[in-house]
Amino acid sequence: MSGDEAYCRPSAGGGARSLLAPRLRPTERGRVMHVAITVNGVLREADVDPRTLLVDFIRDHLGLTGTKIACDTSQGLASNGALHAVQEAFHEKHGLQCGFCTPGMIMAAVDLLARSSEPTDEEIRHGLEGNLCRCTGYENIVRAVHEAAEVTR
Image (cartoon, rainbow, N blue to C red; front, side, top):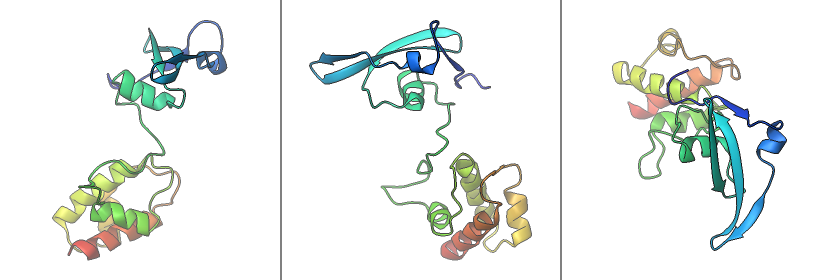
């Protein structure tokens, strides 16, 4: 685990239910919830909006950005709200599933297409080697890279 990833466990006194038990209180900005959690062996406490996801608390409030947002497939390479051609191809060809492997797959595909404008299936599979996907079986990912190659030629 790298230095900015989080290892979380509930504070003394119970499981996850007691960890995030709603203790809402009104403030001038609306209602907040007090959260107490042990992260990497350090007790952290904060008042947050009740809709705050644990992963957002860890990444945004604690600054531990190594914590992955597994289902967040929208991050990276977009420019002024427009998706990069590889991102668009992954979307169009259903190369996205849970999103955990997607950033690595997309970055590897961008690198591959910078080196080869018409990669073969074998070159694509080799170029994506090392990125593990447990959801897609890779077929749609390979199709997405071919689509991105065609669009960017």
